[in-house]
Image (cartoon, rainbow, N blue to C red; front, side, top):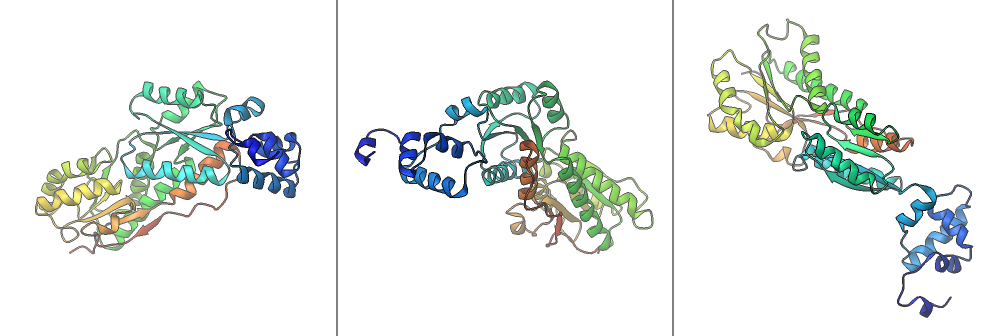
Length: 336
């Protein structure tokens, strides 16, 4: 078929087949990733598709394969660093295995909002769904109501264990600096990430034992992951620090709350790290530019996303997941 015959309309399967010198059935097999196509033939078809600007019609492909090559993502609190980075990482991981991502945003505290987001994704025929930074019951609840749907989470169960380990690294760092009274600012108690990070914190204190940890109860405050919630706690934490028998260090469940806390403490006349050391979690892109630069725990969100995508799609994960790492900066110091 000559080029002028295609003017005014989009290229189709027959056009690709003619240019590649194969049958339309072979083009269909390449589009649907059929394993019986020879590599040389597959490459010739793909070259023809690129040359013609051919675009795969997912709706048409789904009629024959029942697969859309699309992964659904339910995300909430998109303004926060963790969820937003998680969505980006999932998109990259999905593309690496030939999938696309469609995202629906929901209010994590509203079950009806989550269900509506899922309905939106299911209407698009997604091959599976991943819930980003989920509440404790959201993933299991969706799986129970939709038993034929592959439902996953970011972080996964293995990712949550890694986050617990990361929180332990933060405690270990402070203990090495001589801190014995270590407090904590957590996130919402029904979030999987909060549960994991609190567990790692408490386990590390328990393993350290009374010879390294003060016998007085550990002070514990909670925020909503936002910098504003960290700042709102500053006056109360500052008052405890001023007593001289309060915490000399605080582990904060994410960097944004740590940012707010540091700012609020400064307004209260409490210096970081001279009066109290602060450790965050996530190592967000701005953490090294805080004043002081934030000591924090870095997690491999990209690796965890690859693992979550592979689990939902029934594939073998590639690249591995790096263990959490403590990044030491200026917000921690030895007890003065």
